[in-house]
Image (cartoon, rainbow, N blue to C red):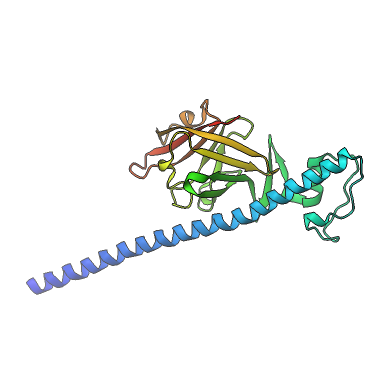
Length: 239
């Protein structure tokens, strides 16, 4: 009887150990997957933003000089076959849209860059955490597995951005301090600068408290110690 009990306990212990190892292994795999996802999108998004900014500057310079747009633009990297003729009276933003097709699209007061079927506002940069993250324009649980997402608002007003607590996403925003800088570079290449003002916890069901705020930018994720709370970083715009 004692022998059977010992074998049962041994087998149970092995099953528990394997289960724990499996969960830990999955979390490690998921962390690595999330890190690769943001790295890949960030790289392409950064290149597209730089290209858009350069094209806008060149279009504005040509417009200021009273020159008609050329049929090809070597700096943009667009081949003759991909090029669309740009109307002479097009605005700088319209010129970008003609050059890059669906790469830049309007949405409320912000411009978007589409990559692999997803629309991105721009790049979120938190230097003190060495984070460079793409921000999806629409949030969903599936999108949050890959990148931070706009939860509400816009860059012209008060924006709220959410992300999972992956280390490569918002897992370390609890380490931020008042005065730390945060930058969002939009699709046009314009940098929007913010300063961390407050780090607090908000109840996970308090949607009104999260989005109705006088702060210009809010970042939030799940709290590591209490998953009913949201670790929230409030930021003010740096003029």
